[in-house]
Amino acid sequence: MIRINVTIEVKSEVRAQVVELLREMSELSRLEKGCIGYEILENNRLDNVLMIIETWENETLLAVHKRSDHFVRIIPRVRELATEMCSQKFTDMAAVNEAIVGRRSVKNYAPDKVCVETIERLLRAAMYAPSVKDRRPWEFFVIEDREHLDTLAETLPEGMALRTAPAAILVCCNTRRAGLDGGNWPQELGACVQNLMLQAYGEKLGTTWVGIYPQMHRVHQVKTLFHLSSEFVPFAVVAIGKPANEQALVPERYDPSKIHFITR
Image (cartoon, rainbow, N blue to C red):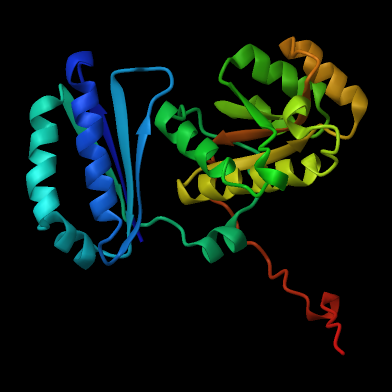
């Protein structure tokens, strides 16, 4: 599997024109054989930055895509309109089964920063978790400040990984979105965190899930630390970064004795 991330900077006067071109490119590319995904993202902090995230089955089909009529027609025009356009290619993205089996908690991290584009890809994966009635009650707080990371490490008993992690994501429930009958939100946020960690593994990053909810004293401590309003309930914080050490292989966990078939 091949992932290509393209970052495009544009001036405000041509932004709408570029967005229209990219949307057409996305629609046509998704119809091609071998296209797993072709998404156009708009940066919520920088109006002049757009991003293409495309995923292909293999190099052969990617090469066919680059010879397609719509690629030859649209991409050169986007390059003309853009002030800057650069791409990153990842040819060793982890398959789903590899990520599930290979992922493990990382306790020590290298000091390398995690770029904003990577953080946004992790959060995008998180937001595709299943949600009752599509309420999506999650909220995310990206923490990169060393002082807050160290304070969290001191506050949470299992949070020692936060001492070396260059970034962390605090995952909260927005109880207003969860609704009065939203008793399933812990399961929804659990799936959300799992998606985030699997995406991080695919990006060659390590993670550690540090639990907060349902220990209400920890919930209160974290709410106080970040001055969160009453509708937010801290669920977990996920340490993120490049592992400082090579990770040992995960031992086999498949246990047939734990499987029970209910038949007629």
